[in-house]
Image 1 (cartoon, helix red, strand yellow):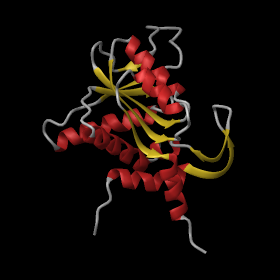
Image 2 (cartoon, one colour; image 1 turned 180 degrees about the vertical axis):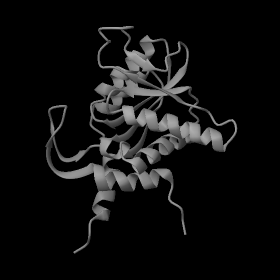
Image 3 (cartoon, rainbow, N blue to C red; image 1 turned 90 degrees about the horizontal axis):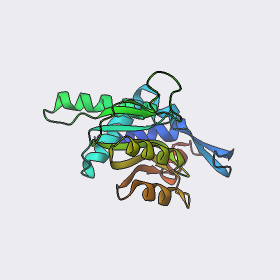
Image 4 (cartoon, rainbow, N blue to C red; image 1 turned 120 degrees about the vertical axis):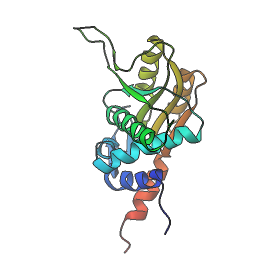
Length: 202
């Protein structure tokens, strides 16, 4: 019996609980015949676990070395937590496996306390990975990139769970990443195809 990878298992859950066909208005103002809400998967007990491990495997496969993972609240929140937790589990299983700490980027600076925009890990010069759930226009990813760079951190890579492959999304993120690789687990077509495959025949 073949054991499915973390990524393959994650795709199955995404297609089952996060993908819908129909007519939907997007945050970009456009319309689409499908909608993907990754949060129903990243906040799902098993879906969240798989998200953390699948992203770690993607980073490892691409030779990405980093100290932390972060993104813009709130789409990135469960992704960050799951990746950090998965890295701790892997470090226990395999001596020397890297720990990836987490940080979250506020949409605006706090008006009280320290007034900072980044919560959690924040070290000048540290290599970090920016994560997001769905990349459409790339706006939220770019906001997180800019905040991390302003805090003095170095962008090692950008990762999204699902890339919608909109005309301007990826190019905008790649420009903001300034040479750091843009990686994805799935395209929207990958999730659509798996969703259709899961539907009962007849």
